Image 1 (cartoon, rainbow, N blue to C red):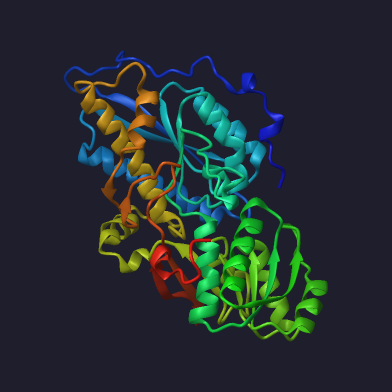
Image 2: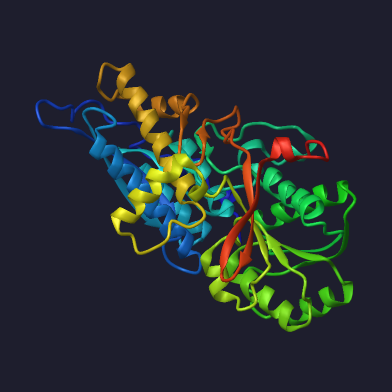
Length: 410
């Protein structure tokens, strides 16, 4: 997918309405100030299962905040926009949301490549952007993070999902230590997320002694993998690792099994979806990782699950429901601090204050403790490995990577 940041001029990104409103809507008796939280996710298209879970979970956080009166005198509203998993659409959405003076923060996007098109828009307009799903390290730490030359890229960008540096390395560690795989065939879809995840897997797996017996690049839109299957079969790996998302990995797994490759396919959170199993009749035994622990196993998530079910959403909360709720709640908590620090009213420079407050957010959320480091990354490095068993994902192993890592910080 094309990355559009280099094609965008700063002037085109800056909007005249970049400041926040003052206290023109300050409430007297019975009136509340309206604060909008924008949302960008693929609500339609192949990744809509994940996107709808993101939208619904953000809406649930907003509804719960309003019901509880979480921020006195403030009524929150969610403004969801569909990016169709396309970077140019995400950029248009960010521009539209930033142009609304009531928008004090944006939740999303799902895809790292879409985030790259939105980050500069958010920065130019001083609005906080927080993703529940982006995992590419470059987004927060810059392109030289592998050389440990880490520099925060955007002061307005945050995320509640840990990075591919952590997730891919966790996958490599799990494959070697827990699943006992010795040889891996590595495939990626050449997208920002998929290529980064596969690279981190390869680095950790080989550090530990594993051997990569072959590698291949495919296109995200590919659905016919006959040529790849033949190469994988000849290499005789113990596992096939795929950096990419479920619309391609589902057919890839089935075609591998149909072609005589009986070893599991393994991937990251882009594979961890109920739709992966729907697309793949031979998914039994395949692995995927996802950030955090399964929300069903967390006492902190019990109320989220109950509330989600009670709300009657027909779509599952999917892989990012918990992290989306936490991302939205982080924005709500930032607004709460800004209002409290200003005598119970939103200040004229509320957007700027919300960004500053995001760096100080600290609370126990659905997925665990929520706070951010100096790059805007989550401090929560908990990851879980799942395996398909009898038509559903089953959690096999969870750990904080900083404690699980046996190869040293990659």
